Image (cartoon, rainbow, N blue to C red; front, side):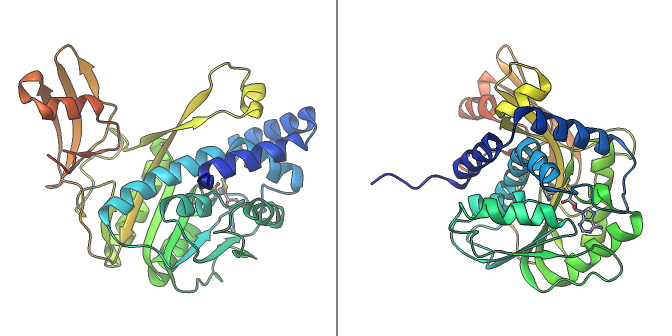
Length: 329
Ligand SMILES: C[S@@+](CC[C@H](N)C(=O)[O-])C[C@H]1O[C@@H](n2cnc3c(N)ncnc32)[C@H](O)[C@@H]1O
């Protein structure tokens, strides 16, 4: 018997079918409109995803990337809480449900899933796409506005992916505090820009203040060692380009790299990485330069050379965002 398709493959196939049903010019026009909107002023006072064409454009154009970014953050989180599986998941500002697919890809099996968003067209499309996944078919898609009236029901895991950017400062604070009150674990993902990183740090500080431990990417729960304004902690996830991407970006590359910033915090006991690789490793002749965030809360650069034997082999395979050194060494 063939293995059932992975959530990632199922999502890719389902989004490709969705796109097939849309005239190319209409899809491209909806994407151009989305890009223009996101260049405009946020926070917005009304949903950006106003109709099915908007939601479809978002799903086809952005969802594969937000899915890969969240999946990458969840992989690092899962490594820090081995053996734990969320029994319930709430995705706030979940849109078409990218994070629910990432949770399904990280922890197989069924669970109680709720997606909250104020854009009904996004929820409707997310529900439709989720029919392709046995783990997500039973999810609840609920209209909710993030604001003063937001209440979250208890959940093992709350995800907030690419949402803080669309909120006012007061609503960001309310959302993070509500997530901290409702969840055992909170994973927040933002664009990998200086502003995205700043929003992640703001949320990280609130979560630590609420008694959470940081599970990833930081190997510690102390203050971030990056001096504000000098740099920003972010990572990269590889995303296959859909035919729509190639059409809109008129490029020939089969993939693109989605840059993201994130924090995964929990009330569970954590086994954090000894250190994390916080930049793309630089491979030179006979040596690898690794920029690390260390468990003692400091940044460092280490040079691993051929003389280090197995460690050198591992360093050559090390990726931006990996734990260092790998567990087996
Ligand atoms: C960039 S999309 C991210 C969607 C999804 N989380 C993902 O990662 O693909 C931002 C989402 O936040 C939702 N959103 C923004 N402001 C909101 C608010 N005040 N209340 C509820 N949802 C909101 C939008 O409708 C949209 O679906």
